[in-house]
Amino acid sequence: MKKIVLATENDRDQILELYQKQKGEEYCPWDEDYPSDETTSFDLSRDSLFVMKDNDKVIAAISIELDETVDNLDCWNKSLFPGGELARVAVDPSMQSRGIGRQMMEYGIGILKERGYKSIHFLVNKYNIKAIKCYASFGFNVVGECFMYDQDFLCYEKALRMEEMEQKIILETDRLFLREMNMDDFDALYKVLADKDIMQYYPYIFDEKRVRDWIERNMNRYCENGFGLWAVCLKDTGEMIGDCGLTLQNIEGEILPEIGYHIRADHQHKGYAKEAAAAVRDWAFSNTDYPSLYSYCKYTNIGSYKTAESIGMHFEKEYPDDANEITHVSVIHRPATR
Image: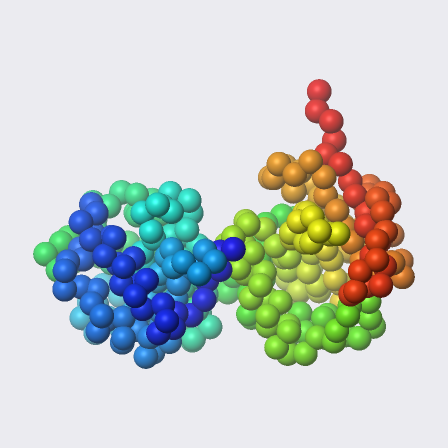
């Protein structure tokens, strides 16, 4: 299972090995002296080094840099300071060309925003066409050029604004849009998940830690699976009123794609759960190869399985389990194509 986490001292050897694998690759400015063990120690001491792990193996890394030489370049927009720099982006060669570098960049950008930076800036070898195309897709602007470390670099900069960075819209309906959630959604999601009436069929009560873990788990799902539970937002205001999306769940011993949904109490009984779930159903059949989609809940949660039925699902089975006593399962199969 792939996930992005803050690196620890236990990851040091694997990180240094990962760095070593990058050296000698085309356009890589690193040499035998950089990045060094001291560089890694500095990043670890500042909680500024993040890694993607596949189970326990480090397959990618990224750092939040502090480099006065880069910060002092004249090309940066000083009104966007403090600006953060992402550096030492490394992906295991065996895992490249799979979108992992992009996932690391997205995660790093999120961390910069959480830590209060107004912009992101960094240097890219001006002849590294592959990297240039990647960064262009993020909306970075080339604001200058420089010669450093015996190489020609382009200077990239981007403002970290909510509307530019966080609104990663996945799909839209008549009244809603669904986007990737992030830690800025904590307050809105807490109103949903910590509501005892809404979550009465769950086996535990959500406290602040569980809500944050919920968000982090879905952010990791976006990286690992390309989907997860997404923030459900009103089109007319942008307000987040719940979540809905596709996750992989253990249903009687099988890992199956499941459509889940949770809508804030004051927005229930308005058809929002049905509207969002139907859009996720259509997205899943268009963007994945799953032959069937499921929804499951405690057998007494009539509202949940009625919503599933409203988007075309039908009763599949019920089975006993420790969490729900009895779990009710609904399913819809992929429409036949001619």
